[in-house]
Image 1 (cartoon, rainbow, N blue to C red):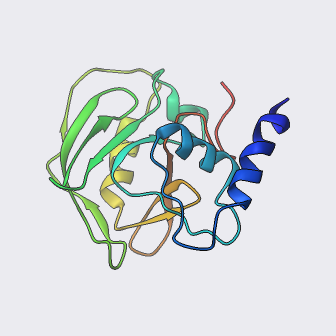
Image 2 (cartoon, helix red, strand yellow; image 1 turned 45 degrees about the vertical axis):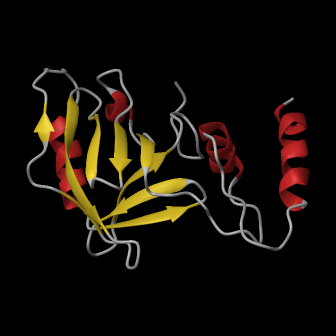
Image 3 (cartoon, rainbow, N blue to C red; image 1 turned 180 degrees about the horizontal axis):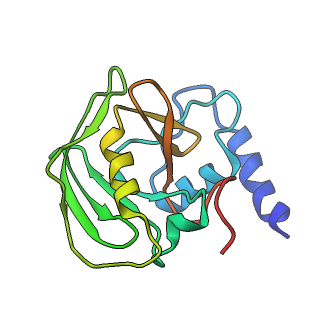
Length: 165
């Protein structure tokens, strides 16, 4: 049944002209692109700004019952979101020219306790980010030495590495 629903979308994507790449305008479209990947011959048009959801890699990533989120406001260089347990906000810096990205040292984080969740490791991972990569609807945060720290998508549970709930 899923292949029937995706088939018309693949035909539509294949019929796009060779001009500028199609810019997705809705989260639903971005989620579809994240599921099927960027069609051949088209560049990824995902932007850094907006809401991102952590693509869980381990059951402990969602041990507190929530999927961590990042909402990146490019105009104000501010972010907000959720660690999977606590709400957070602060400043971040990014560059469109060399894909540099870093989160400010002064993150404001609420103080709710969530057993079984390693929030300090999550925060350490964010603070270790020095670069980012956007590919096929996935935001990857990287350390300065290009080690992958985390993967983020536009909708929770989307993507090949998402855990089954």
